[in-house]
Each structure stands twice: as structure tokens, then as C-alpha cells.
Amino acid sequence: MKNKIKIPYSLKTLFKYISPYKKTFFASILMIIISNFAMVLAPNIEGMVTNAIIKDLKNIASSIPGAHIQIEKIISIISFLLIIYIIKTFSQMFGMFFITESIQNTMRDLRNDCIKKINSLSVKTIDSHPKGDILSRITNDVDTISTAMQQTFVNIISGIMTVTFAFIMMFRVNLLMTLCVILFIPISYFIIRKIASISQKSFDMQQKSLGDLSANITESFTGYNEIILYGKQDEYEKKFEKINSELKLTAFKAQFLSYFMSPALSFITYISIGLISVIGGFYCINGTISVGQLQAFIRFIWQVNEPLSQVSQLSSQIQSSLSAMSRIHEFLEYNNEYDVEKRDISINRCISFENVEFGYGDKKVLKGISFEVNKGETVAIVGATGSGKTTIVNLLMRFYDSQKGKIEIDGIDIKSINREKLRERFGMVLQDTWLFSGSIKDNILFSNPNASETELKKACKLANLEEFISSLPHGYDTKIDEEADNISQGEKQLLTIARAILKNPDILILDEATSSIDTKTEKNIQGAMDHLMNGRTSFIIAHRLSTIKNADKIIVLKDGNIIESGNHDELLDKKGFYADLYNAQFSSL
Image 1: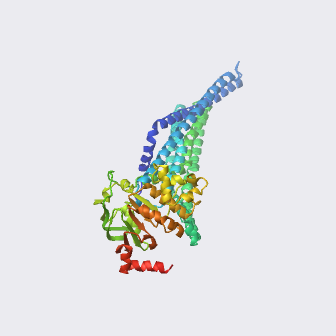
Image 2: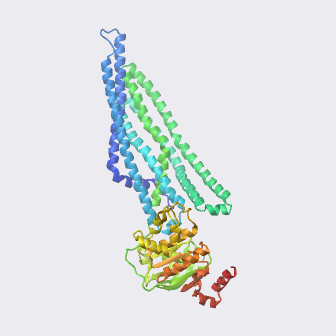
Image 3: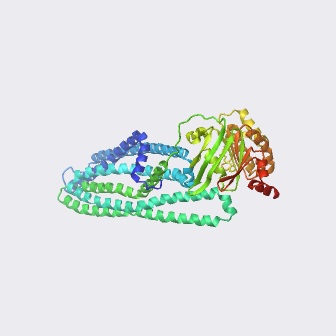
């Protein structure tokens, strides 16, 4: 993932998304060709007007009998010129319509695939990348590409057509003058390539800095309470200012070098026009070309320069989009979570851990643990922070896979079970509650969208939510805001418990499920939890040992090892680590 991504590969990725809309793209190109052909014809027609007026004035000055300004002829030429401009305008409008539709469809598909990619990644991959950086790739980088394509595609295609048609017209006027203009093209190309090669590195760094900045902002928002609690505002401000300064520096380098192209190319154009004016002046004097043709030729030079100038002005967007596409290409190349064929599983006997080892990086969290949980049993996992409690359930649900040993359900290694099918059997209640913006009903139905009204109300009754919901003005249809700030932490916990009840899982995971609920609320739901866990294989992770006295089995972890196991009374009789921990908690009350 850290390997340097080559821009051509990222362009191949972009072309893959463009290809479904190639007909619309080609339609826009056709409109652009018509528009540019009309634009290149215009100088010739304008030259015809100039020549006609000069010819008539010469005839009048020479006192030729009947000489006069041929108004009818001039009007007919101007009328034809007006038709050309109308064709140019409408073809340009249709071209913009087609290209806009194509680009927005392309960006929609790209965003959709980015979201699908997130859903196909393993938890390990998600955890190993800053959330803000991934968010920046899907939002900022895609928007950068969309803006660049919208503004540059038409200019590039239009520029190619304009330059091609302009040179055809220039060759028709005079070969030598055209060759003189062509001599300046390698100089312009060298300037563009040299500046682009230098500035591209800065644009790569600019997009990376934007991702780092987004990650920093996301981290600041998600940990806002802790930051102000511990007085770390200044520290985070300094961290932000450092990243922001790096962004300013890379953006300055990239933009300055990019904008330097336009005046450099204009300087080359002025030199070429000066040279052509001298050569063309001599040709006009000796009658090789007319004044109108020289006028048209100089217009053609500007038409050749204008696309190069536009590309140079848009080079910052082009290079930013290349860097952005490179980052998206890299993201889309992340390895998907490999899975086996889907098949239904049943839990009839037991879940067993056999010499399971796991670590995050070089740090070993579980060091060869073994235990067995029979169907319908409740097992509580106790231990200090970092002892491996949460890791056990993460391995059980295959958020991560064990590095050594195996976990089996009814003798079947869970690595041979499809993750989706496996997780269908689980219900989970976390201390860090997750609710989304929507109604209370929508949040509870999240685990089982097809549940009936009766099942919904039964789940809420078991979670002791009836009184709370009935007190709300809109009941089940009450809206929860984005951060669920309009309900208490205890009510959030109860909603997630109701969600787990509604799923009716075979295996229940309670990760600190009641640790952030007040004592009264805890008592209200404890009976419901006991009823819920009856007949289900349940794993409870809790620091408050009063909540797990009725567990069939208690596993005590220390430094990644199981140091004690048994039920509550057995562990108290052993007078070991668990007994000391239990007595310490109750002596402090």
C-alpha cells in the first residue's frame, strides 16, 4: 500500500469509470469539434470583410468609375459570420451538457465504488489507516477530480481541435510563416514539461497534506470532550498549525510553479507574433498575401496560444486531479477482505478456543489461550485494560483472524466460515453506542428491518424502553440528531440493547454494556438481560463484577494469559486474583 503509485495506472482506473458513458463523451467531442471548426472559420470570414472594405477603399481612392463600398456584399459576409457564431454557441452549449452529464455520472460511480470498497475492507485495514484520510479520499479527492475534469476536458479537446484547424488554415495562408510558428512549439512544450515535472511532486504532497489535515480535524471532533477535559486544546492547535503550514508550503510551491507557465508561454507567443508581423509585412508589401490574410494569421497564432495558455492556467487543477486520482487508485487497490463461500451454520454444541495467539504489530495481546463455552452458557471475561478481553470477541466475530491456534464452533474452524454468515449469528451491545440520524424506530430496526410492529414493541419492553418512548412527543417516530445529543447516555445504551434483542441472535456480546448506565437504569435492565441471555451463548466483558455474578463461567485474563476460570463462587473460594479484585471493588463502596 505504501508503494508509489504511477500516474498512468491511476488514469487507467479513471478511464474504466468513463467507458460506460463513452457515447455521451463522444457526443460532447463531436459538439466541441463543430464549435471549434466554426471558431477557426471566423477569422477567415473576418479577413474577407477586411479585404472587401480595403479593396473598395482602394478603388474609391483610385477614382475608378462606379467605385463604392459594397454594403450588400459586406452584409452578406457578416450574416454568414453571424450564422457561424450561432452554430459555435449552440454546439458549445450541447457539448457542455453532454460532458457535464458524463462527468457527474462517472463521479457518482466512483463514489459508489469507494463506499463499496470500504464495506469490503477488513477491520484490520480500516484500523491501520487514519479515518480522516480515507474520508478525504472519498470526498476531497473525488471532488478535485470532478472539478478538474469539468474544467479541463472541454479545454483540452477544444484546444486540440483549435490548434489542428488553426494550423490547417495557417498552411493555406503561407507555408514559411506557418513553419516559423511551428519552430516555437518545442520551446513551449519544453517549458510545460519542465515546470510540470517539478510541480507534480508538490501537488502530490499537497493532496497528502490535505488528507493529514482532514484526519487531524476528524480526530479533534471525535475526541473533543477528552481534548477539552485534559486541556489539550493548545497541543491540538499546534499540531493543526504544523500540518496547515506544511499544506501552505506545498500548495504555494505547486501553485506558483503552475501559474508561472502562463506568462512564460505568453512571452513566447509575443515573440512569434513579432516575427510573423515583420515577415507578413514584407509579404503584404510585395503582394504575396493580403492585409486580411495577415490579420487572420495573427488571429490563428492567438488561437494556437490560447489552448496552451488555458492548459497552463489549469495545470494546477490537472496536476491536483492526477495526485487525487493516484490516491483514489491506491485506496481502490487495498486488499479486500478474503472470504469463503457462503453456507449456513448452526451452533448446537460449543465454542472453543485452542491455543489462540494474537498481537497488534509486535505487541502480543493473547498468548496461547484455551477455553470452551457450551451452547447457552454465559461466560464473563475479566481483566485489566489491555489484557485482551475485547480482542477475544473481535477474533470470535472475525474482525481479525488469530495468528496461531484456532477457534471452532461445533468443531468447525471459523476461518472456514463465511464472515457474513458468521456475524449474522451475533448480537452486540457496546459501551460506545452507535446511533445514526433518523427515528428511534429506524435505529432499533437497524438489526432486523423486517421485524413486525409486535416484535419491535416486545424488544423495547424487554429493554425497559416503553416508558421512555411513550414520554416522547412523537413516540417511536421521534428523530435522533446526528450525534444523538437529544437523548441521555443511558437511553442510548437501552436503544442499542433493544436493537440486539430484536435481532434474536444465537450469540450475544456485551462489551461493557452497563458500565456507563446509572445504577437505577442498570437494575431496570439487568432482569431483561438475564432473560435475554437465557438459552443463548453470551460473552460479557465488564469491569463491574457485580453484573457477572450469575455467569456460568468467568475467565480472568492477565497479560494475555488466562490465570483463573470458574464461576463466581468457585473463584471467590480460590482467594486469588478475582477474589482480590471483587473484594477491592466492594470495599470501596
